[in-house]
Length: 100
Image (cartoon, rainbow, N blue to C red; front, side, top):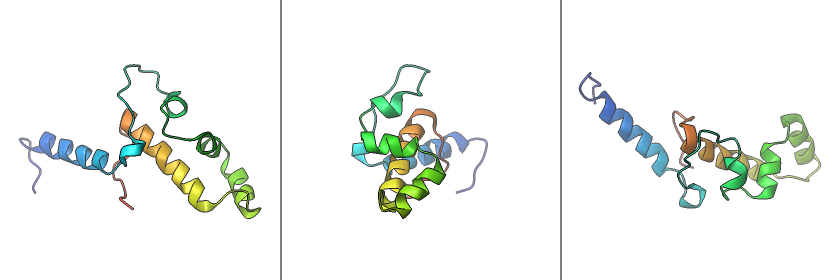
């Protein structure tokens, strides 16, 4: 589809909806009325306490925990994917989302 001055808004809205549709239902958050959204990942119920700790941990420490077998790479990636999904629902931070 060619983007024109007449149809760009509809194309953008369709893309935004496709991105939202890729977010698993259990990762969806309720609408937030506040402009202060920094606490939403911790209060929305999508991330577990472990996932919150993972996403608040510096990368070099995550590598150490994974190398010691204290964390699995799958769990780290899933925690960051969930946090990215929450952030996207709040402020549309992702241009494209993977569906895998």
